[in-house]
Length: 398
Image (cartoon, rainbow, N blue to C red):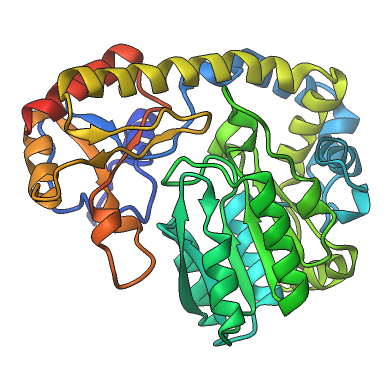
């Protein structure tokens, strides 16, 4: 009898397969040359992850019999109390409003399933983080694109449409260092958006995974959103401590906590007790630990964003309109010459050894022209030298 054995790839190969997040498929027909530089996913820099701290806290957990036994048990649907209290202090709300999730996308899914009536209209960013459109399929929601500019969602355009009779059940936006367009929703627009939600009775789904990665400019604050009883804020440790943790959180109006918990009891029950216990220990043992981790990460991302922006301007002068980011992991340069075939440019760039996401992939409506004039370049997990080389290769594609 012969037994077929399937070879298991090494861990390094598995890690490489995950380096381009699922759902970003516009490069699927392009075969990169060996040594291609990938500017594809919003991935944190390996250098920014505190691996020694993770190793230490893991060893401490498994050598403490009582703590290890507790970590291997079921836990609350809302999350471990110490972790929720830490998150609540950082968000400036009561712990009762916090529900720990399996990352940001899980939080968005719970929110959509709870507040979006099946088949109803949902206003969304245009351009948009495309995976939210997949989440919206859970409620069979119809999309109402709202333009996004350098100051975030165009709230005035939304207000005009609502005043004209259009109705929505919810609105989705990324307010800080928008993916893909890198802009930040201004404090004035935040206030106006919250007012519209109250006036017209729709929910705000605020997706905020990049908020802690500000390295320039002025923080626009979250108090407006947290003070609204029509707002769900979604956040995650994915961009700060690594996506493999799969730990995020919801900041909910108190009346929504019970419906969210009831929904979780029909789905996943709770977030991994082990991962919560590890993070809880790290965050509570030293109140300054998280900000100590963030400080060098912010400097690193600032250096990388400037390296890429400056190199593009130097290597391809006049080819792009570039705004330097104030935070986050993305550059969103616009082609200055509208005669350039963006898809052909991406193919030539792949031949030259650099891969990026084409802007048209992020359009949420049928009109993809303006988005198509942009490139989304992710710089988080690339070194400055790699970014400068990527700019040289991209310039050669012209």
